[in-house]
Length: 293
Ligand SMILES: Nc1ncnc2c1ncn2[C@@H]1O[C@H](COP(=O)(O)OP(=O)(O)OP(=O)(O)O)[C@@H](O)[C@H]1O
Ligand SMILES: [Mg+2]
Image (cartoon, rainbow, N blue to C red; front, side, top):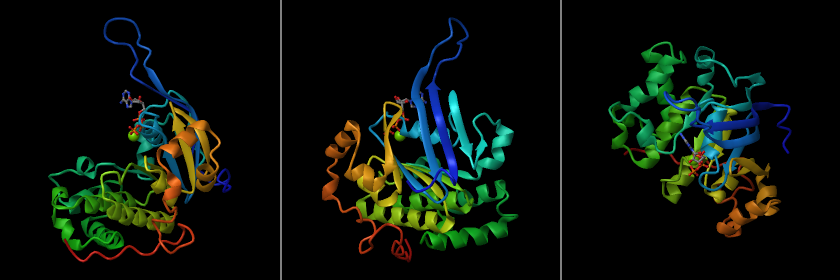
């Protein structure tokens, strides 16, 4: 373990989430379906934690619970030591900036009628990160440079960008708000392998430079191994195994993790594929600069 207990930024203890239920207009109270059964997760500052498990195991639900985007029926979520499990909307508002999400499908999360300038600028003004439009423009241009996108994209709308460019806009939008914690849920699953590598390297660089804590959900174990420090393996709404990536992938303790690894034969994948030529994933080579288009 990496001593995350002392510096935990995000901490979930005994978290349960139940969908549905409640009392309909007529008839008896409905029980709902519990999909998380007492989950414990700790994410340290600057730490990238992977969440893996088969479809329906509760990965997205867990990620959303950490961000208080789904109601938690039992257990606690702490941010920086503060119990945020039952904070109301007004109390949550200042914390929202600190917890950002990068979506799987940027086409669905970026307003198709807005320019990239507006998509990036509005949250900056809304959260008071930029005092006015001019300040926002300066910050946006610096961030575009950081994610290797040309300033020409500012006047385009999302459908005028490639999938990889859109995903970089999604990353830029989250990073501009200077969050402490980012949830990335299957963010590269729609991209080809070389674009995946570009987007992941960028995210890793940014998270390192900004000291971001990150929860990274993916079906792809080779991606998890390349980008994450530790990994949680989920099944049926429970964590069945947890530990540093090397330990979990090389010496899985649970039968389920072994099954998962057998389904995707990891030994054939170089764990350093994302950062070729480096001994580990700590010092990624720079993302190549994109000229235009
Ligand atoms: N809004 C919802 N209402 C009711 N049930 C839901 C809702 N969202 C998810 N579920 C159920 O909760 C369980 C966990 O879903 P979740 O989306 O968290 O899984 P996942 O691990 O992210 O799956 P995938 O890998 O397919 O994205 C599933 O059984 C799903 O059907
Ligand atoms: Mg999911």
